Image (tube, rainbow, N blue to C red; front, side, top):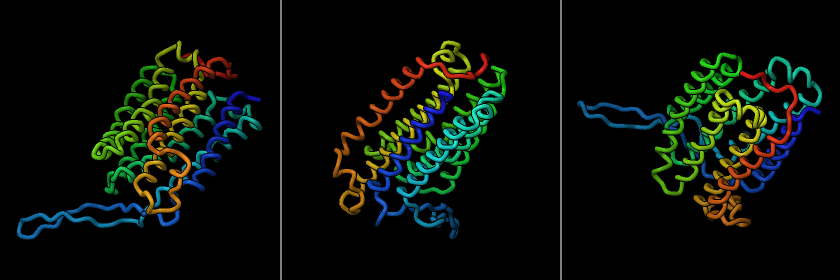
Length: 292
């Protein structure tokens, strides 16, 4: 069996388990919905009045998280079946099908996480949220284009362009998150975790040592598991902390110390990623990428 089969197996188990726990612990019934608005101005005798128009219905963060975990689990199950039953197709042309699977997944799941974090930290502007989501999609397109060229200069250009675009959601979420001490942590960790994907890609381009140390796809799978689980459960913990006793289903606090979870979950998750990448370096993965 191809080594990446086992990476997808672990990822599938983690995300399916997370989905099951979300059903039990995320506040769904009677959850306060989050409303998006579009700001506009009206003028009377030269005096501007700033108004807001509600768009869409109220959004449930718990529902979006459940959808996100479901999509992620399905994506890894596709990779699992691909490497189990169609190994030759999965590895041909520099693992092209795995690359497509990854960037399609990220285009959806990374955007959904940005949606829930933006809503949680108090963002309401539908236009800005649309810009964040579309920026994420463009970043994934740049990532795919980067993977399909062997020109190092072009790869670096595309990577740095994606980093520049990433500043749109990072600045937007930090601007909102830093207004409330409660949301500083998730805003900062979001920024760090999302930048790690670009850093892993950049190191694979520029560092022969990094290419030899960890397989690119294995690194992305490890980072994907850690980033999604850290941010997902930080959102659940923060929402339960905000809602308090108002929503009975927000019962994660019945099982863990939420304050301790918010401190140790991201730190433990990042440490787990480091350990997993080091362990991954001890396994050779067949059909590796050609040296750039």
